[in-house]
Image (tube, rainbow, N blue to C red; front, side, top):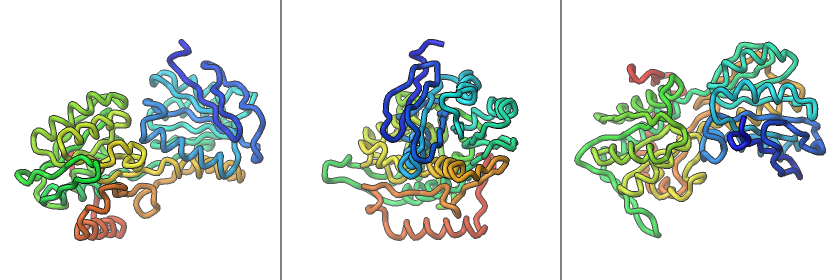
Length: 358
């Protein structure tokens, strides 16, 4: 496989050099914990300012807290998942104490590899692999998406504007109560984001929700094209669950003077060039899942065979208001969000996972 199609990144305390593509070489000296961790990232790679970068944030925390050694691989296609997982599992220099597989698309490969490498400890994010050596971490994305949908639905029904201090002049269009959702690739996982968002927007009142999929996690131009169309057809707020494609949504919001909602990380910080149009982000704490899995291995308590489902009540997902626009959101809107969060947690509000039921 051509070396320019795959990057291996090495990072640990005192170690920053990249390894040679196509092989897993030694990371150098061991950290004080003596723990080696390999990570196979999701498609789109690092620098997406969202899902993969949140996983890397968890690794960075683990490096800081446990002085682990780390090496990461960024695949360019689904066909590389089995090989990359095997490369880590086959490595003897170093031996990997934990292999983190980031993203539901790795489940099929991991199911086979976990059986073949029964003594190897694995973890997976966004899917369940029922093997005794795999710790599975899933999230209730629909719950956090309901929250940001509720926010969007409330704001599209009122006269809301922001400007000043070099910010983009942005406002809602009071002629229509309309919001939008842009997904990356259409699958059951991203449908959970869409379903929650639609349900949240409708919980706010008579709000129209338009949805579209870009078919890619790394096509900002397509994301921008879709979002521009939504804004031009009356949408005040567009929420994306599209990885790197979502930066195009933010660009469209700035061009049209409308608003956007980020995903996975607090994108008013990770994509701060767009902070003046990002109302909030549906933060999905992939970093917590990664850090917890590493911590368990360091403490010789790998949660193999267990499934951890993280939602609002456990801080696995949350609606985080933007660092710039959060203070501009009316207090009554914030109070309504707290009420809907309580309703979800205590079971008074049921949130669908399928857009057809939203």
